[in-house]
Length: 428
Image 1 (cartoon, rainbow, N blue to C red):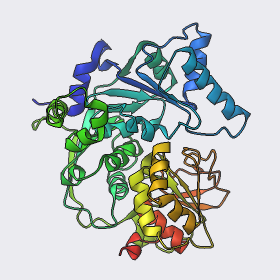
Image 2 (cartoon, rainbow, N blue to C red):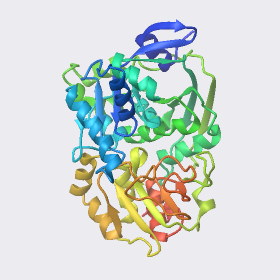
Image 3 (cartoon, rainbow, N blue to C red):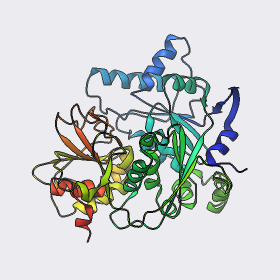
């Protein structure tokens, strides 16, 4: 019997099986940020175990509240900063060089096909877009990862999605993943890996694949995974060109990290998404999804474009195409946060920042702040936000606030109308 990509990665990284179905895996990367990692650092220090397994495999960033908004968040940043300096962690991205973790780490080439990746952040599943097993973990597992470079997991069951057809103009990866979460429900992939395959995924950029994998956790998934292909190689080439004689050689090597044709799946879903419409959430769960047309006219107070889901240059280009030459409604405020300094610089050079500013958006530095209701776009009680982020839990972006998740195109159209609107209204 064949194996899934996740099973192959487990087999290649397993160092022990101390109990039935407890697989201890060697880690290729441990990612860290200033919200969850300081707790692990402080505990390790208290136990007299302030060490790291390999400073070259640990990557750290201050991204959730940046710059610090108060003494508490400043202290969290200081703990991470001092720790990185103490252990000579070179890949530490401090204020001014920092971006949203799940955007800046791939952008720097830190993830490769076949890798194992952990982080104390549930959206670590984003990195599965590269054909890696990437999972969010808790404080204890993070401490072990930092100290020993290993992490324990149950053997992965896998759900496979085969996505056929061709997406219509105005329909994007965010619409696809919202549709999938609606079909699976928030518990449908609990403790499982979600494979995204088929012609639609094959045609996607790495940015779009990251959007898909980013929200696997919203269906309960441990990780989302796409098969590495030429698109993956092209994205990584500047970082791997010294390791391979050619792109073809890289592709041949990375192609081993795909599932076998006779691999066994928990379930296989196959859809033709040629007629998929732009999608949006309602209520307070990511599986509460309708078409944007069904929600048209719903009043909003704020539009937010950014996050580890949709803050990359591709996302900003899509939104800017809708916004160009237009202004947002007087009844709303718009906030856009490019996910990394490189994204910000590209957007500036391409005139995208100017389009956002001319339309009436506030352009912020790269940060996660608004997404989890900590800074740079927090909602007041009773306010509603049309957002390109990944969670619409009650109070997620501010106590008593409501969040409608949607694509950058739909968010831009909503900003112009001042109420939920379909981006196809603004297609040329």
